[in-house]
Length: 191
Image 1 (tube, helix red, strand yellow):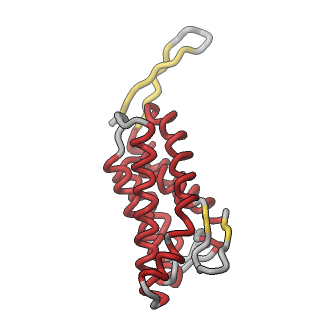
Image 2 (image 1 turned 180 degrees about the vertical axis):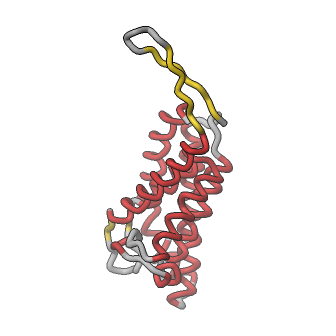
Image 3 (image 1 turned 90 degrees about the vertical axis):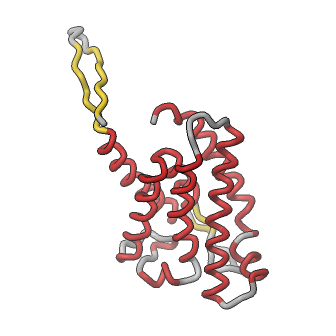
């Protein structure tokens, strides 16, 4: 679990730096909880749906890729748990169990599942197109969970739920997937 790195200081003496990868992953979990929360504050409401456009999914994609399935799962589960417990980190600075059971609750569950699946299917051997594809599939899964939950909460047809909870987000999800793939493709060998 520990990996020793050495570095030289002007006196030419080598000092080992011991990096505990588990502690590093825990810091990563905390970082992605914060980033996902900050992404919720970048919010564009849409007049025809209770689901706003946010930057959260961008960080969900990267959490699974950068942390792997287990720690990516924990980062998003931690985000949802904190918001449900009352920390105002959901879209629009909202919080509480009502958010989890409301119209956007399915997206929150989708964050956890997408991060886990992205971490499962993404490895360092994937090329840029494959990485973007995995990210786009993760984004679509979030929208599917969100739309199905929206259908149940609002008691609308699957067609209406698709029009309110899936279709408006496709363009943004493609852009977020490509941007996340660019970032991850440059960073993937550093993890």
